[in-house]
Length: 250
Image 1 (cartoon, rainbow, N blue to C red):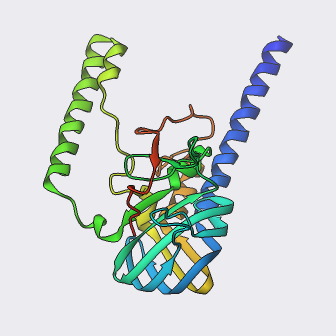
Image 2: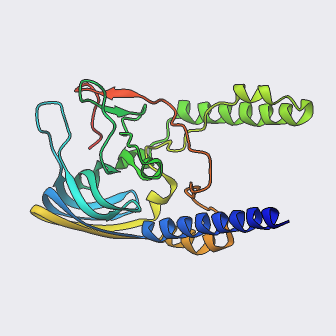
Image 3: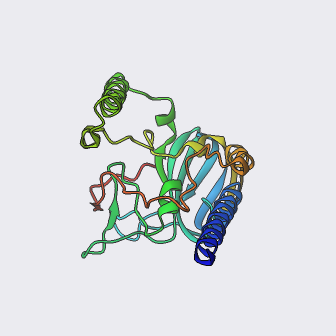
């Protein structure tokens, strides 16, 4: 009886700890405050729409776009992060990930099919992105057809599993692209200001992440980023080395 009670209390304790870790992570997603270098110019960004003239990041050598570091709170993580951004009027693009990327034996970054670098932090990988601003408004017909086909195949496979009870059909489920435009869902709800003259600062507030934090108290994971207590995710398309031929989306 005592053993059963101990196991029950231990289980409740673990679940509570997991719950509050997820709430803490959601809370840290809301605000961005960072100091970055190199940075020149100024820009305001409302979701995927920028306004201004800003250059942040660069190359340590030709074709190796690896410069652009910051420190602060960004993407839900406190510490060092990679950041590159180009804003020219309302055009440009940017990339971001927390911490440091996984590298191959030659020192090249390991990236996914969109060129987004991987780190050893699973949650940081969820919040990382790489995109051109115009890609938010550009949705080619072939991409829409591909998504519809994959959605049909996914639903058909799930129905077959329910009808037959054969879990092996899950092998035919197409992998869902969590970042079809190169960024996570919360990206489009972010408001940011960046200003610099070699060194600079970035400050932002994410309305979507704020709502996700509040709704999260009900255990509803609106942005699907509560990884504590879940099976560690596998990353589709990993790994690809990011050599000079991998275009940085700026």
